[in-house]
Length: 275
Image (cartoon, rainbow, N blue to C red; front, side, top):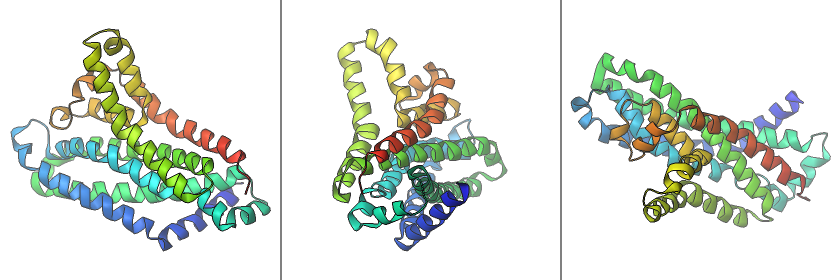
């Protein structure tokens, strides 16, 4: 089983390289991380936090938008694209279970996301060390935490992209569903909560429902967990109040559960696909 998953992953990674997804993903992360790190290095001297921690606080806002977008762009045609080209039916004629095929795709695409994340954050770390010197080493734990949580966030949205791909018969439909999912989870969800908070005016929704709503969204759980553990939350986001009011284990639990739950959901939808 493991050998078949790895063989599928090697083939999928080769396809990703051929389609320039590795290059595009790395370039996007490195470019935006460099811009943010250069822009955020100026105010670091006036803060108690070290330059790398300030940079990490800025990278949290980048990752919550860019990592899910990259994951969905890579994964939206994983099933629908192969079904349209006729290669899915051929692949399923081999002694390869659907779980193994989906797992191989996930491993290969997660490797692409991991390479992009590490490359982007490495550029930001170089900028922080060049401006802060040895003092920047204090932010290495925060950077490492951001790396592995970003990979888990990418894994969750990769599997959600696979689920969208299974629900659509054509790549164009899967792409529309993936972009819609990104808009809802990353952009519109927070706007909706903000509108509800204003309408609630400090009522039961704000005190009881809001913390759980934030934790149950993988993007918000990622952001809140990293902000709660960061020494420079005030410099990065208006969610610092929410991050300090929610127990750290709640968003951490969501970050760990979402990749597994999304993978199971994708596998359930894949079972219904007729190539």
